[in-house]
Length: 381
Image 1: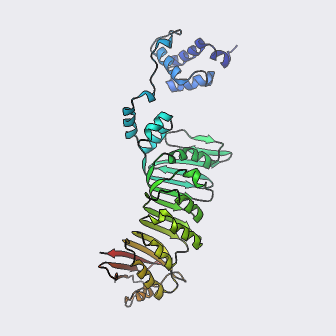
Image 2: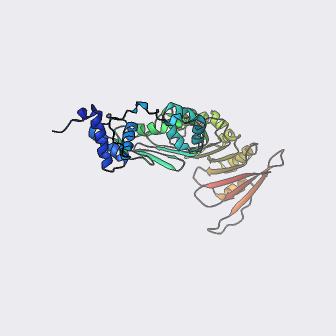
Image 3: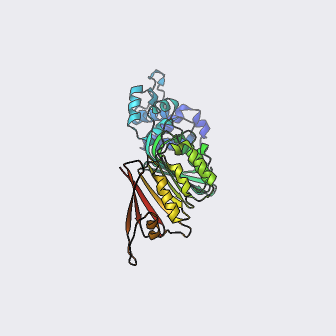
């Protein structure tokens, strides 16, 4: 008659006999502990105790009645001197510190002395998956029937009944809660099904550059508000399709935008010429601009940009009523003569404009070809 696991748990001699059996099988300790737990239950003995008896039997000491009460109390990771713990945390990379921080409160306190600095954090959320990259390490959680599947470097694949976004954020959100976490580039691709900002970015975030892809301007504004304005230098927004001017005005009034030095927009409808005045504080700008009358609007653009004291360079994609703005028309609006062009010939026009009451000039570079006309503008000091 086989003994029940509960009966074995209640007798320490039987438990040690099971451990000795694993030793005699010459199995690795981790495989032995897994088999031990499967046989008598996971709550029969914790791993440190199992490890003690395993190695005692392994080295030939078979005294089942050995009294451990006289042994010195075993040291744990948190017993390491603080100076050494600081050294350990200092030499770990940001992802490794995140794992160490999650072990217990004492280690969390040590790790928080070294705010992690990431080169890039890339997050992509859709109704089928949540993916994120921390520097060069990739993580993902895919929606599956009845739950999701989580993939992490150096961890076994984990299946769960949770929603893929909830499960993914369970692992990602603690990283984003670390005090003073910093990143050079934060990239968010926000597709149909996305959480609120408090679920994904629960605390103000120190990002030097942000790249947001979303067709929902309200979501963009929500996530942009989670960035620390004093740290944010560059804003790139892609995928925007809304033509609601009120959303633009809200964006222009945010501290994050006002304190940025660089901005890039890939905006389906483009900005109006008068919107350019809102970019006067930027060092670099790249965006689309709608024009109705080339001969009126292009000189207006030049006059507006000439008042930007901080401007270093700018790239504007001009969008006319019928799409592409003819190069000859653009050149005529700037007072430049293109001369006759052979069929298929490409030409670059350089137009220099002396800024009033200044020794600086703006150099306009116009290239023909392509579906839309681009103006490359540089300040010449």
